[in-house]
Length: 394
Image 1 (tube, rainbow, N blue to C red):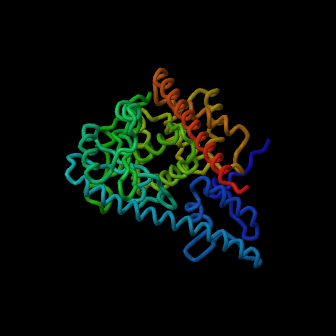
Image 2: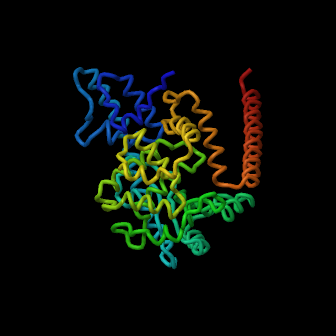
Image 3: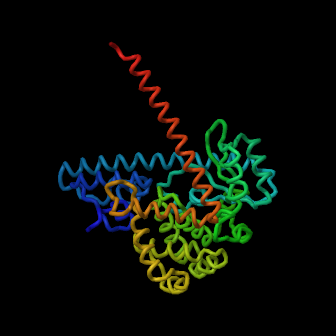
């Protein structure tokens, strides 16, 4: 059975060059890229250039109209991305002002670091929050300073507070009272309860200044790639899997060309993975970026990670699962067995993050909350139906 085309991945990998006269394919590309959170990036790399539509052939007036319509969608997505990037830059200034007296380094993570660092992985990127990393000992002061600056805790139940503060790798999310911006403050990159334990002190010690922004740092190139891979391949939520894989592709291309990441980038990437117990996530990251997006990975890096690979049977299973998960979430791109693959990764992500007893308890709490929320929604819906029926004209 053949799988449906994942047009967003094909476009990013250079396997797809849309034709202006094929309005059906162009529209499907927009739908799939938008569902993956990649329309701005696909638009920038594939559909739109500074002087208009690029990879299309305007052989007919209809083709020209198709190209112009699709370019308008892509340009709109890119404008949203640029607006969010401006908001990120503004919010970082507010954060630095709030944390000016913090006696510890402040390290920007993930998407916000891509923006502030001027990295290609920021292209077309959109955000839901800003992630910071500080030493664990600095968490109380960091939280106090942010609360004085207007950020407040968003998770108030005793279970949620214990979940974040004792078990996870971050404080409960903080949301600003006026601007509604959300900040996640981390002290490492995986939960305290995780089976893998990255060395937070080494991550912080190897961090580098953000160019042009005094008092702000970001992870070094090797650790930035490892964090991105860890976020994807140790996660339980695959809602942005293809976007995260595209981030990895752009980071590896940028740092791995011998320039931005230094001539020994690949050697240091493998070395740092060993320090942080992240060789398996690195193996998966290099394997699937190369397979799905055509990322150039040197043979020596592949050889250095052979020992991190799972056994043949498990690798075949993981290939089947990841190839179904690392796609646009749009139904048009869904291959057979995708739902089962996502379910397996949901359980795997929790299993890797928590011991069995804690995992059972946590999943039970989540299930009960979903049940209670469903009851509340059902009662609200029934009340609405009764009110509508009562107010309906007779």
